[in-house]
Length: 189
Image 1 (tube, helix red, strand yellow):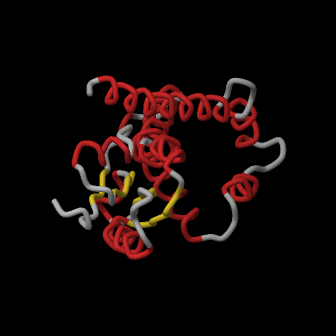
Image 2: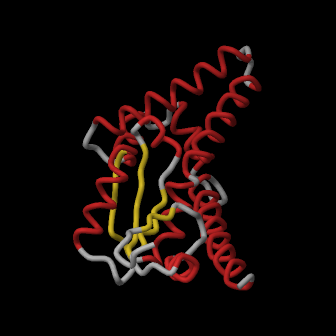
């Protein structure tokens, strides 16, 4: 492989230095796409090795564009957080749909009804978020009537140990695991 060849790695927890060492090429982009990229609605971020220049950054962006949003180049130190937020993020959303449907069944809805309502609620909310300029917090506030049913549910979800705390802990766990994967790969050399 030529030293001018740009290699794009999408391996979670594998550092640029590890790819450079394994392949012997100095030009490496470390990218983290996510599964919505399969339908052109993903979010991908990337970092570049020091040997990469502006043309390599443009080439990496163009290569990843069909997957959806592309952010980069970032600092490589941010890539484990990227993996935790957007690489793993679709699984968090799918779990939310599962949990919402299960809660609907627990509240008396039939399985098909609960599943359909939970799924389309998340699909619709995501589409709304993508179309409107308001922040997620503003959209949440627009749906929430003071003293209403949404407020009652959000009080539980936002309490100590609720969704914000759980999400932070989940992302932190994924970041730590990405760092562990890199250390494990280094120890196998």
